[in-house]
Each structure stands twice: as structure tokens, then as C-alpha cells.
Image 1: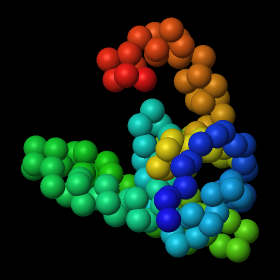
Image 2: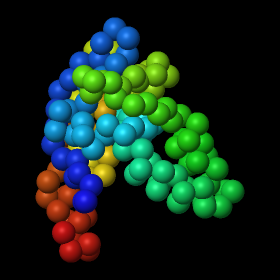
Image 3: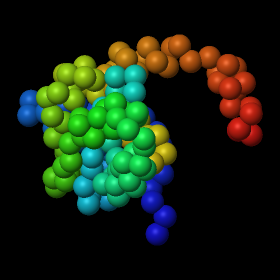
Length: 142
């Protein structure tokens, strides 16, 4: 069975216990567990457990000089199993890193999800120039 391709943008709310409801279309793929960790650009990455484990194996092989990348990836990770409503707990330190306090934007990024503060997501989208993006992707045949 081919894994789900995570695509799209969704708006959800964190409850007062720090739980975030995952998009319904991805819940089956994420039911076995997720790992939430610090992402890049002050967002959070949400990996299906199996995808995180595969990336973790590659990260563990990095040379000692890349230990800061390993720390960023592993020390900030939190694993959880979604409850019946598809909610996962986002620990306080991760909510603070991403600036999450209510509304959250969940975006698909092929093999994982990202969680963004709505204003940061809007700012990120506002700075992206489609023509410049196309030019950067041209060498990759995209």
C-alpha cells in the first residue's frame, strides 16, 4: 500500500489542553502514531511514525560535526497517538517555538505535515515570488 501524500492547507484550533485536531483526510495514515518536532521557519513538522523512523535512521548516520542538526531533530521531538477525534498533544515548548496559541494552519508537505501560526504562514506566502520559484526549480526539471 502506498503511503498517503500529504497535500493541502487546513485551518484548525488548538484547545486549552494544547491538543490539535489533525485533518480528517489524513487520520487513517496517522492513526499508528505521529512525531511532532521543530521544523524550519518556526513551524512544526508532523511525521507519521514510520516516516520519522526512516528519517531518524538517516539522521543518526550524520557525522559528529552535524550533531546540532541531530539535536534539533531528536531533542525537540514528541511522539503521540491521535485520540478518537484525531487530536494530538502539542507540548508547550513546541507551541512556544511555533508561536501557537489558538488558530493553527496545517499544511501538507508530501510525506509530512507542517503546523504554522496563521500570521507566519501568511507572511511566508506573501514573500514567495512564483517566477523566482519556477527559476529555482528549473535545474531539477520541475
